[in-house]
Image 1 (cartoon, rainbow, N blue to C red):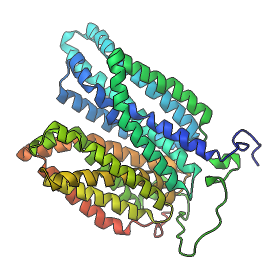
Image 2 (image 1 turned 60 degrees about the vertical axis):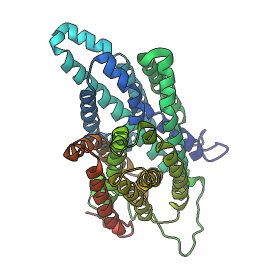
Image 3 (image 1 turned 45 degrees about the vertical axis):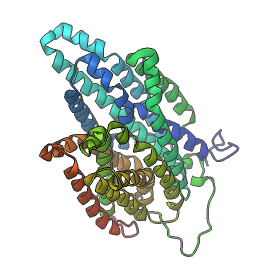
Image 4 (image 1 turned 45 degrees about the horizontal axis):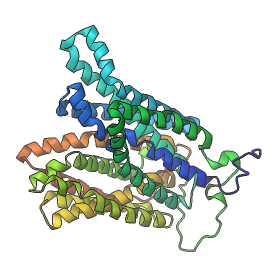
Length: 437
């Protein structure tokens, strides 16, 4: 039996500390998310002399290349635990942000060596390096490690925990651009990044070192804080028949339906957000109408986050997946026929439903279907697909736009993909999973 320590003698279940601390960690990943980087893009364009197209390409290459090694980061999480992984990723994210704050001076140094003719290539390469690092440690590793840690501390209340995280993260991500913009107005974009680097790389890393713990079992505790033995006759047993390895998980039908849906969601929402003003401009609507979709969508998402978090503890996850896909079908239909009126509201409603379900589905599914022993590798592999989708999405929408100078084809392609996944999701059950030997 583990010896008594601060965790076991805590006045209440330490998992609730983990829930709050993990949520803070997920919010700390905001500087590495699209919503955090986008605040700085115009300053990079003007001060570094790079075109928007080149910066977008650097963003694509940096983000996509970071996705290729997230599976290995997940395996690192499985081997070393949430505490070491989160502290390391927080510190390295801070270091990456500090690098980005000094990238103009680093560019000047290399230009002085290789000459002015190499300036454009140097800017491009150094931005790819910075974006790769920020995206990998922020959107990738830190997000994965904090969410996985929380999921390990809860079982029957996993949906509740995921809903709490999702709501707090949504508010955190919604307000972070305003905070970043305020810092820029006070200290400039370089100073703002340095302050954020200090908060994430030093203060949060220290906070994670003190509060984070990998799982309750190493302290002789049970998930949820007590053994919940009561079970209704009609309540399903959602536990997997064994803890799956990544290889075994990838050999199942259900894994790929969930994985592809989450990856497609990342592709769609990033692409729409990236091109949002241009999308609505092509439908005869202005910038204000484009931007105003986010607030009502966030309200709807909040409702569905609470709803899905509550019922996730009692129903099969494939039903929540189907609701998420239904939201994406509604949104894609609105994008296909986008115009003032009904299509406009379809995008708002569909985005709200889909976004509300995304957090719970992406967090609860993997431990519910495949166990927690290899949770890092499995969720890391899925995160690599989501990050890759978010990297490819904006570029894909640009290519589809060139066909007839609007985004209707993009909407149609998204609708077809969602309909196919929705049909396939009917069999994405966990009770029929087969173990590959």
